Length: 100
Image: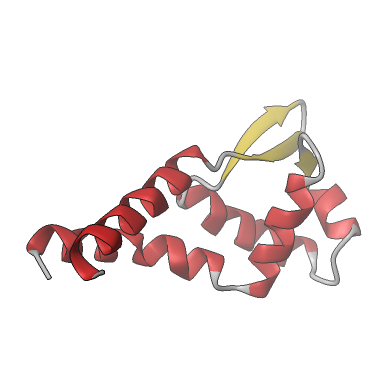
């Protein structure tokens, strides 16, 4: 396997780590059903506390899986999957071209 394949794999590790947590998966699926939700709205539909939701949203935001918009005193979150999808497409392409 070439150096480029290794770099692509390694660049995806933080994304896989963010996606591996069931709570973060639940948040992503919840946001997929709504244009945007506040932390409180997400917490209302979760067994997790508001601080725990905020922690998971921070991780998702760092990986550019969600975006945050401030409206007054509320923060609203929405999915922003474009960059992550492109990373995964690059990984699939490199696996297909070098590993199959």
